Image 1: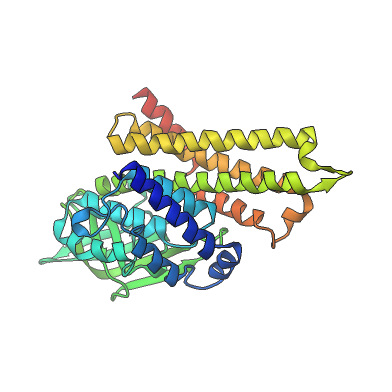
Image 2: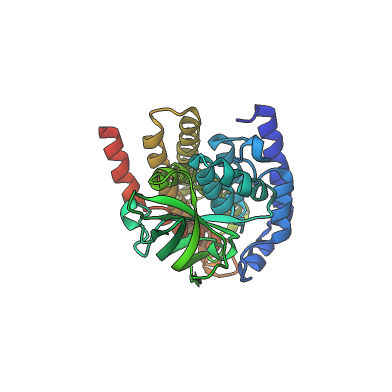
Length: 368
């Protein structure tokens, strides 16, 4: 965990960088490109230490935790950053750290921290449930070598990955493996997405050589640990989007004149703005509480993470849709940024599990 002054300085520097390098024009240009991210900005984020935020200090990172990554993702979400932050900086780093495999960590983490390597985690199939039952990849041992066969779907930024971390079924239980594409037997297909700032891929394995990561049979435990950190980071991204939507909408309500008055003076608009503020504050509290409990290793953490997962997702969708309504006809045009936030909100609400799934999970955790 970083000291308070270090955290504030890091966020201030990041905010200034993203204000200059991730404008609406930059986002639209980047999301139209096949790569879906800006390599120059990615390297700048690496130089700042953002990409190595969760990487332990012994491997060249900052050794920070959930609190810091949640706040960083708020800044990224506010500007709709097009980059594999969740995939490489959070999901892959957290999986490698949780694996306890020192050799793999030494080999992969330093390059992730600098931005020289992009990694991601493949751990669901065509059902897209991100649960153990959804894993469709199987690993077989031939002598002293492993090979993978099967399908991994909805792999975030899979098309960019220099390292694919894959959860696969084995006779001894689910295990984590490493594949370095383009490897023989790997077929990758980029999937169409509703949110054009997001990249998803389908990866098929056919007798693909793979390196075991961590202990045999510990793959899902490792993935679940990484997924919890990623849920917190995604909640932070959603909070950043909500707060930016609120800012833009309130500013529009102050300056848009109808019938000789700013529309913000109309009572109906005031009520909608108050609802937006409530969504923003509630989501912020949920995301930051989840980050704090996870950082402390509190027994409340699982329930807090589930609460943040559905509360922030739903709040973002509601805020983005309300923003479009408050803007009126102008927000229905593709040129207006309100559409980009709504698309990000709706896509993020399906990523790593739906709101209904997390509601059910939350109730079960409370009961437990």
